Amino acid sequence: WVRLVTAQTPTNIAVIKYWGKRDETLILPVNDSISVTLDPEHLCTTTTVAVSPSFDQDRMWLNGKEISLSGGRYQNCLREIRARACDVEDEEKGIKIARKDWEKLHIHIASYNNFPTAAGLASSAAGFACLVFALAKLMNAKEENSQLSAIARQGSGSACRSLFGGFVKWIMGKTEDGSDSLAVQLVDEKHWDDLVIIIAVVSSRQKETSSTTGMRDTVETSLLLQHRAQEIVPKRIVEMEEAIKSRDFASFAQLTCADSNQFHAVCLDTRPPIFYMNDTSHRIISCVEKWNRSEGTPQVAYTFDAGPNAVLIARDRKAATQLLQKLLFYFPPQPDTDLNSYVIGDKSI
Ligand code: DP6
Image (tube, rainbow, N blue to C red; front, side, top):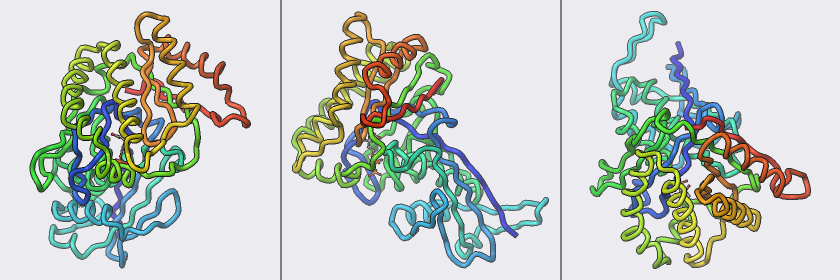
């Protein structure tokens, strides 16, 4: 027999960034962060997990290609879910698995991203969230999503925020074992459904410095990071929660842009400096800033992760349409420029 479970998880985009770990193994951050989860139909991971007595080892395929499961991050997630596995009884298929059997049984995992993994569009966030969720269902683990988020966190920090839709906060937590470092939903996906998210793929090349290495160097060398984590972010988190709850787009946009810019400033303050944005990213920022100023009130917020691609959050559909017109005018998608495609996340949250 084979028991199969399939799950689908969207990626999330941080509006208050996570950058820097206080514990690298457990993946515990130096500050809280807040993100918005995208619509599953646009940027998501679909993962099928299977168990059968005929499997002789744990195996995983990513986008059809077998990958090694020996990395600590996969092992941590598998171990944590196995420890919470319960009895499974599927009368229809005649499957009966006792809690203690899970230690001996092996798992096969097949995972697909519906967007290019190499484009640096937060694929690890959707990937680990989906893996942990699917494994929990397969093994009948009874944990709530917040509890599962603390396990997904051990795969990739940002993954813990993809267990919920809408706006999500990752609470950094205080304990050494990381048990209180988990995600909570601030508002669901219906709360602010005027927002439209547009992702301008500036470059589909893989980023040069991974988030993991980049944040390690930052923690070791940047003084600005300490100021950011201790003084700036705690205040911004409170203000951002307020802006989201009251759907105050002007404050939301101001905080989102400021936090993205500070994250990249911290990267520049790292030794050796990390450059994630390129000239096209900078031109997009100038274009949005100019437009927002000329309108008197912000129409669009921008945010950039560990790469040059722009995530643009428009206040409503009208602003999104105008933004697209501007992007197509100023950054025409042609083969001889490096801005070659747009991924549009309509009704994204
Ligand atoms: C810039 O979650 O990819 O996207 O925990 O080492 O796997 P690891 O890092 P990762 O870092 C994401 C960094 C970011 C900001 C964010 O998503 O909050």
